[in-house]
Image (cartoon, rainbow, N blue to C red; front, side, top):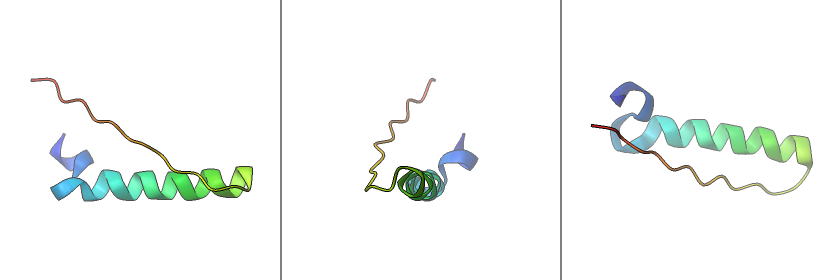
Amino acid sequence: MKMLIGRAGQVIARIAGEAGEDLANVFLCDVRLKITVKVKK
């Protein structure tokens, strides 16, 4: 799972940012995504 999340959440933050930009382009409005990550042990 470390690979997906990345150090200090950098990878998942980048994914969320890119997804937000894509959605903003589709819907022609500002979009903010709130990402929640649950870790199972």
